[in-house]
Length: 243
Image (cartoon, rainbow, N blue to C red):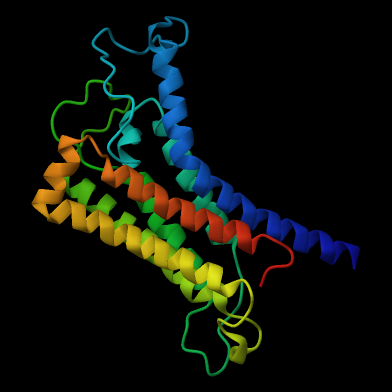
């Protein structure tokens, strides 16, 4: 009995770590990049012996989370996504039951994990010269396309997990009827709304120009809201009393 209880505790702890990583990523990138430049670590010859004299710090606050790949926080960005993918691959959840049309929790989290790895492996493309590029990768439009498509389906899969998989129970008739299920539903809707807002700003030129004029990094902020909803749903799922 004690061994089973420890296993349950570890499983819920894993869920919470997925939530912590999702919520913490954008803020860790901002704070880490700010500290790196504020403390002028790039001028430390001992720590940064591989940096050439041509290194030129650009804007600390990036236009998107993915853009931090090219900053000194690139390893943190890739490492966090790989950790999230790892936890998603380990997640089992509910299997599909007779009479259910929804896929198993494991299948959905495996798909999300694959997209997370693709986002990490294939970075966004970048127009122009990257003066503070810490990577040896040469930005390419095809690689960038893989990144954007993977990111879209990653967030979409996370939304479906919230709306569908997190609201299932052992009893098919209780789907969406437990106290925590409304919370998961709104988290999923929040992710979808964030995706739609990104598309709205990206493809409606007046909105895009307005965002550029006021220096509103809509892509970063709506990616952040998506991660906040994603992280919140997993933290809720990590509570021992949640369903």
